[in-house]
Length: 226
Image 1 (cartoon, rainbow, N blue to C red):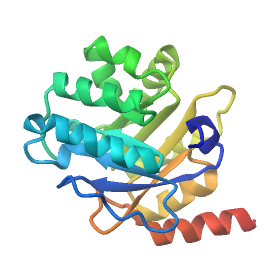
Image 2: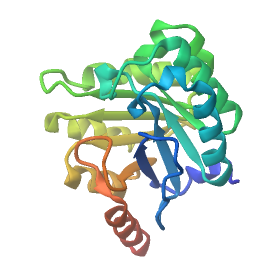
Image 3: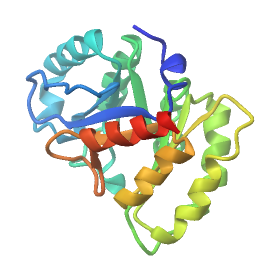
C-alpha cells in the first residue's frame, strides 16, 4: 500500500468518513482515497476491544485507513477512556493506519506524545463563542515538536475562515495542513487552496457541513483540470 507521505502529496486526499456503529465492513464507493473509522460511534466499544482490533486489521489491509476516537468536547459521539484510546490507536498505528490524536490529549497525557509522531494532531472547535485562532500557534508548535505528519483544524466559526486559509499558504516544512471549515462552500474553497485532507460523507456524515463523496470527487477533478 502507498506510504502516507506519498498519499498526502495528492492534495486534497479524499477521506470517506464512517461513523462505525457495527463491525460490518462498510462499502467504499469509487473516489474514496482513504477511509476514516470513527470508533467513538460504536456502542460498547470498551467491551469489544478484540473484535474492534480485528475490524481495524481487516479494513486497513485493503484501504488506507485513518482511525479516530474523537473526544466529546471536540465532536465525539461518546466518551471513551484514555486507556482504551491508547490501546486501540497504538494497535492501529502498528498496522500502518494513520491515527488522529487531539492536541489537548497530547498535552494532557504524555503517552500520546509519541503516538502523535507521524500521525494527525487535531483541533475541533464547536463553540461559536471561541475562536480557533487562539489555538493555532500553540497547536502548530506542538505538532512540529512531536513530529506529526498532519495538523488538522476544524471550526464552526465563519469569522475564523480567513486565518485558517492562511495556514495553507505557509509551507516551508513537512507538516501537512488540513483545514476543515464547517460551511460546504468554504470546504470546497479549502480544497482549491490545497488542504491536505478533505473528509467526505458516505450516507450519514460525521460532522456538520461535510460534502458527499460524489461532490468531493467532482471538485477534485475540476482542480486537476485547472
